[in-house]
Amino acid sequence: MQNRIISSIVITGTVLLFPAALFGQMVQQSAASSAVPDFSGVWTRKAIPPPSDLPKPGPHSERGAGNPDQFGFTPEAPSMTAWGKERYAMARVGRHDPYEMKVEQPDPELYPYCLPGGFPRDYTEPFPFRAVQTPDILNMIFEWQQGVRQIHLDGRKHVDGAPATFMGDSTAHWEGDTLVVETVNIDEPGWIDNVGHPRSDALRVVERIRRPDHDTLQVDLTFDDPKAYTKPWSGRKLFRLLPAGTYIGEVITCEDHFKEMYSEDLKKGKMQGRP
Image 1 (tube, one colour):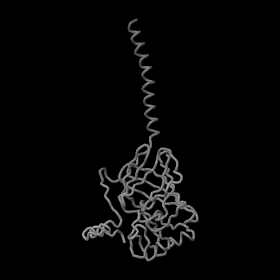
Image 2 (cartoon, rainbow, N blue to C red):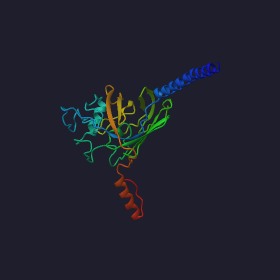
Image 3 (tube, rainbow, N blue to C red):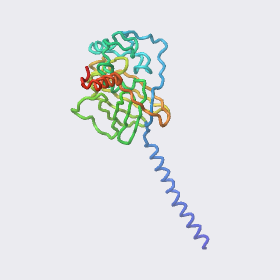
Image 4 (cartoon, one colour):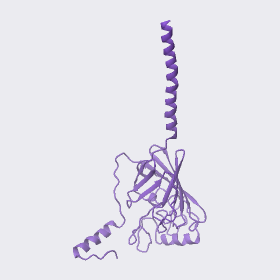
């Protein structure tokens, strides 16, 4: 009789423990399935081979996007409005590649303007960036110009009436493992990429950011700027993960030039400022 009682207790306890254990597994699986990817790390550009039949872009080439891994987002030139064509022609004067610098070229990043490239152009620079992700925000810290971009993940709306900035106002939401980012209110002075495609104050960019594998970050972008382009156009950037502990440096446009001017003014004892 005593043995039967003990057996009943053991069986009952097992039955009670099994649902508890099963519930614990279900909670863990639910938490894992609802988890979002972490994009944190240091990322640098990953090669996207250009089409084999792509001609070398000339100074006024309509196919001036070139290799998207190098200077742009797509090898196909977007369809531009009259305003966009005028701005693009100015950017391409005497220019066979994006880093061929001449005095008459109106590149806003170069001397004497020395403006930040901002978003989305910083994606096309040949320098890494660090992503730091929390539940509420994804920060991107670019080695080029030490630019800092903030992507808000807390469900907030865009700020009405705020002044335009070089990085714009970015808000986002998750669609499964993909972060969908909308960026508006980007300051007009500047280019979309290193090729010279213009942007206006009407530019709206939608990104879909995902991590197809551990070492790859894929960013698909749609550019909607009715002032500069006849229709929205798309592009892609791929980035590869650099080893943990990778150091982010500091690359500032015109830094050496202005540092030299400042040092000379200090020696003369007369601060003259920028020309």
